[in-house]
Amino acid sequence: MDMATVVKHMAQEAKAAARSLAVLPTAVKNQALAGLAQSLEQHRELIQEENQKDIVEAKKQNYPAAFIDRLTLSDKVLKSMVQGLHDVIHLPDPVGAVTSMWRRPNGLLVGRQRIPLGVIGFIYESRPNVTVDAGALCLKSGNAVILKGGKEAIRSNLALSRLMAQALSEVGAPAAAVQVIPTTEREAVVELLKLDELIDIVIPRGGEGLIRFVAENSRIPVLKHYKGVCHILVDADADLEMAETICFNAKVQRPGVCNAMETLLIHQDVARRFIPRMFARFREAGVELRGCPETCALDPQVKPAVATDWGYEFSDLILAVKVVPDLEAALDHIARYGSYHTEAIVTQNYGHAQRFLNEVDSSVVLVNASTRFNDGGELGLGAEIGINTSKLHAFGPMSLEELTTTKFIVYGSGQIRQ
Image (cartoon, rainbow, N blue to C red):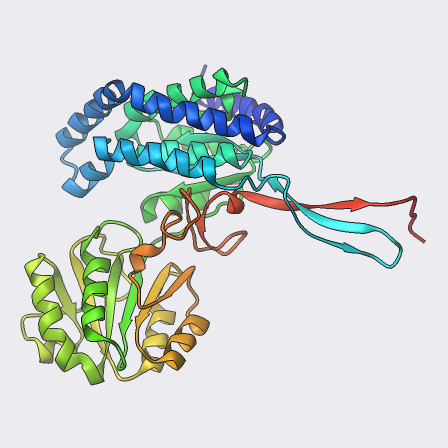
């Protein structure tokens, strides 16, 4: 079969599977997830053998170290995947929950009930652990999913998909509920994005190029975030020791992820005290600093920032730094250059903290905490399928509840419309 036929057939199977999944008891879904967790532990060597083939090929293609790190299914990553499955098992099942109910003057009882989205197309890049995270979340939320990973992880993803299909079959659930497109061809993505009669929503996860390609070519609604340009403001009333710890974590812990800090804003009243220690610590960690004229005047070793450094996602040990005169200027900068992803303020001033929370238009806004906490697991949602910054129909990390919508349910006693 040609690629269009293969993808359409998978979507048709997913559509049929979604109907069964929508009414699958929670206990059965959890049983499948528990079986998958056990299977990951039992077949660790097989999974890592296939993963190693992907890693060898990626190294031949001279992918950077950060990319190889995201691709690698180490013992630690596999243990985290197993724990993630157990976390999802313990999360409440949103499907069928009645979120509200009210009675109309004519006696009708009207309510909202959570239902799955249906069939999800999930397109993502190098992290094969995401294959299991996405499959688990979609299963628990009653959705069928078609997964299209990056070509760099094809062997890893296919190995994981076989284990997921087996876990589903063992509990009597349709194996087609979680499918991985078995090709590296980009044509498969193009064909998937045409199937608006079979697929209900598409979620891309990866670099800005991938996400823009999906958004521009899809006939299906897309939940997305283009980039993570995350800011931290060190306020005039900040605890500077706390600020130093938070900023270092936000930039250095994992610089290649979307919730890493990309721009540091420093109030002018504390810049002279904060910059020497903070910048020394950044340099020791290998961070390249690019600053505004005020920043460069306070530390001549800083590289002058250019216009394109503001609003740029470096995804590396590079940081843009700007000294601001007040909170208003910081809010203006974030409004102009932010990406609706994650912003934080470090301050002991309650009024400033509340104003920052109220006025910053991002999916997660934090006070006195690292931007790295914009993550489903860290926020108590369990594993996440991605972070949505387009506001419809969810804003921020997408876990179980965000993978459902609501329908109206109505109880009557013979009412007719007059």
